[in-house]
Length: 578
Ligand code: ARG
Image 1 (spheres, protein in one colour):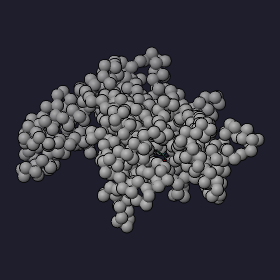
Image 2: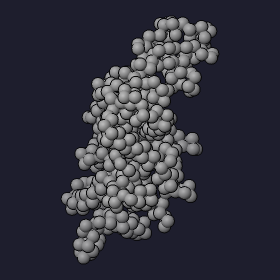
Image 3: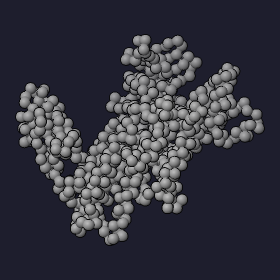
Image 4: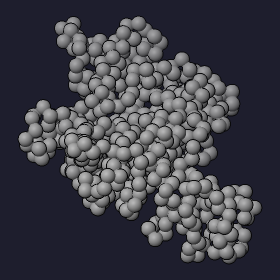
């Protein structure tokens, strides 16, 4: 089924094509930029008129005469130099809103053609605990998979964790060199972080140890049982930490979504062989490389993708080429989304280009880097602890909950402590998640407790509070035996504006599914809450006549449903009371 915007786009495009005979003409429907321009406007006539060297207003008039958008469109008008202003039918809006409430229509319409979409996200390196650098990708990725699933796509999550490579040689070498006593002590490896730091220090300071570490990597990759057993312990411990964080964050990744770097180990030789057979491989200083013309360094020299080092070892890019092949050919992906730090942009451009040339990607598979910027501290540098260490994700989340508890206690001193704690658990986590999601993901941003925990503005506390407030209105009226009706009437402009906004959820979700910018959905929910507040202030519920009262209550209930649905897509479960 088509959304409102798609219905208008299709209907007006059809008229434009009919009138001009241009098969690729597009209506270009957008939300109206000002209320006097109607609800939506079509801007496509101007460029078509230019192409045909004809008067745009006259062309627009012919298109308007030919439009058929069914019951949805009440009026279309030519405006300015050749815009078409579109006014929706209030009855049609009321009917659709009522159908959504009754459950015979859906708030989020599934796409007509479902795709298989692989989403690579979170994907931390396992030698250490998750730190703040993993936060954005984990949260944005999780919102994207939920959104794609809601649209009816078949989504395959891939947690491409780094569990293979030099760091593990280092850890194993450090473990092997400890005395039996210390080994027993470090048996639970509970502080992997400290262990990693010790190993890294030795690795950097002691060339003999570094050599030993490298030899362990080779033994590991050759399948030496002792090394494998030690490696398993590190991985097990590290995964346990990750899962704790996922659980606390309410992230939907499961063990079964794990597809680690080591999974591709046996494919790597074949990847290099295939590149060679396609004549894409060049030997440069002993290493095997792929040179692609379009990639050059600052000095103008070509930038290689190194796929095999001179000692025979494989690299990050080699594994990623194997992963592209697996995702496109074995998993049958139509799209593969990589929710990864923007600093890896060049890597992905190169991998995608090489994968296409080598046939690792099917020609119809789309490979997309969903890049995100860096989280900065107040000093404008990447976020660190005072002592300059990376901040553990777990510590950050605990702090957010602590701060939320203080805030909730301030606002609601009378609530029992356990209730306040429960609210704080939700608000603290939601605040962190929402502050990541509500910003344009491509920019770096400054992490700031006070703005994300504020009850004002486009924040999680504001939205959670707006939702809880509607719930409390519904509860209060229920006590007076007033319950929502089945039919929504739209008389006041505030009622109409609210219903229209609710019905736009589907369009926003589709857009977000296409381009992977959840901040659009956040902004939508924030605006929806604002429009609800206006409605609530201007349209009395309890004092209205019976039918109108039930209709307004129904509209409030539908708003709550919409907010909840939207927040759920962002991985946030709202509270009924706050
Ligand atoms: N483990 C990598 C890192 O922490 C991210 C992996 C992203 N996924 C991929 N297919 N390369 O930087």
